[in-house]
Each structure stands twice: as structure tokens, then as C-alpha cells.
Amino acid sequence: QVQLVESGGGLVQAGGSLRLSCAASGLTFGATAMGWFRQTPGKEREFVAAISNGGVITYYADSVKGRFTISRDNAKNTVFLQMNSLKPEDTAVYYCAARRMPIAARTQQSYDSWGRGTQVTVSS
Image (tube, rainbow, N blue to C red):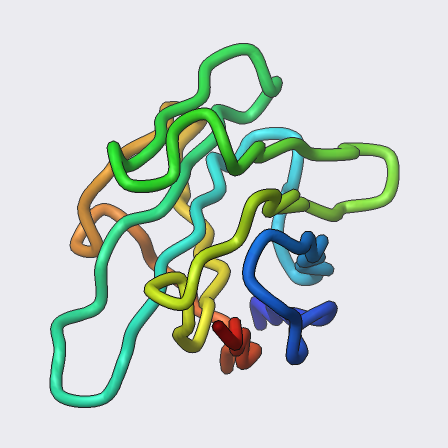
């Protein structure tokens, strides 16, 4: 079955950087669009970034545009989220998601498989 395992979360000061990774297995990674979402307690899970199967097309939430970069290494079945200029409001559990289609999407309902998440905490 599909497994998505996130890593790279942690505690960082405002203005700092973190790089999240998501290792995928059990799917044809090169045919799969990938996404990152995040969630804080009491709030809906929200879209952060998405990337098409070949990495050519990317989408970002307005709140992270210019600070976060999504990328992928299809040879290693891994998707990344580079987060720079972090703010306290970026604090959340970050989830990796896989879509059984090559086209990137912004909605949760478009994704078929989810990781367990990794905590990112940004202190002020």
C-alpha cells in the first residue's frame, strides 16, 4: 500500500528555515502529483503547496508564496518543502499528500493518500 513518511520538522526561530522531506513508497511516484498541507488545532487543514508529476508545475498558497519552495526528486521518490523566512503563524503539523494523477491540485479532496505529519514550530 501507499506509504508517505514526512521528516524534517522541528523548532525554529522566526526568520529561520526548515526543509521538510516526504519519502513515498507503494506508488508510481513519477506519475503522481504531490502536495503539502498544514493544520493547527481547531482549524481546517489548509493547502500549502503542490507539484505536478514532472515538477514543472507548482502551486502555492498566497501565505507562503515567495518563502516556500516545493520540489521533488523522482529518482528518490521524495518530495521536499523548503521553508524560508518562517513566521510564528507557520506553526502547524505539515502533511504530505499523493494524488493518483499527474496534475497538481490545491484541494484536500484531490489527494488519495496522506502521511502522518511532522510538527513545525516557529518561535517569535
